[in-house]
Picture 1 (spheres, rainbow, N blue to C red):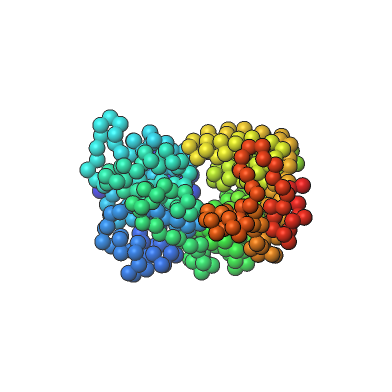
Picture 2 (cartoon, rainbow, N blue to C red; picture 1 turned 30 degrees about the vertical axis):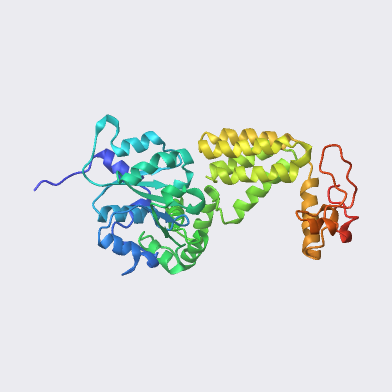
Length: 397
């Protein structure tokens, strides 16, 4: 019997393979967590056992096992597995998977796994739709964002949605144990708390620490985390701190600072539509009447982001941020509506003056509804359109 000896190139590839990939479960029996989907009788397990082929979306936080479950499913149903990231994939990549280039076709079922599918813009999702409808491919999408808002309705209606949860502390213990890396109890507990249910992050921190220091202790873990890129958790303080700095920089007309915090969000993978939405709000809240066209510009940026997507829409975002930061600011409309809302909450539905009420019938006119009012150009209307109790109130100052 001949024994296969790996080449130097293969040895280098194996050495470079991330630890998270090396210990990734290959079978459902090895998978830890998501028991509401993977236990006996639960939907994903039943689908795997019956080898049922269908499209679905895995919606859950980072490091919850979306990619691993997709690969386990594809292997179980005997399909060819193609993996794309929506961050940098386009229509040509999808065509290659479909075998359309060069007229190639495949007999085996094809599963197309799209990581971060919420990053696909509407045009890309529309392109994908007919292939899913015809069954040319089985789609598995992974997303950290609510698919109801991020995936077009026709595509979403053809997919089942499975919701994944953060790993529990006990599950994290079991996942970390798969690395076979020894560490003291306090280091392991700190690592689990730091990762906040994100198995991939825990393993990456562990791998980085081992490469830097060789030995895993509480101190070396903390040092390794400090020396690596700061995590931008969309649920955490760093996310809200960065967004706050971004808005306040535009409000203070500090364009350089606003662009810097925009760059931080882009580099961290923030949803560009989230950024654009904040800009639309900012245009009305902070610029308002000083430059009404700011809202037009902000809406145009949002539309560009929606159609183009990353990476090119970064240019549209920067264009909009530079413009909004340099606009004059006026919060009078913003302050006025909240003052009016405050009065409505305090006073309820106060009687509307008769003269501005609708008078569609003869009786209403006899009762004084709409009396003395002319709705034509040039007519000078009297004051007193507010309810009597608020007739001296001035909202827009």
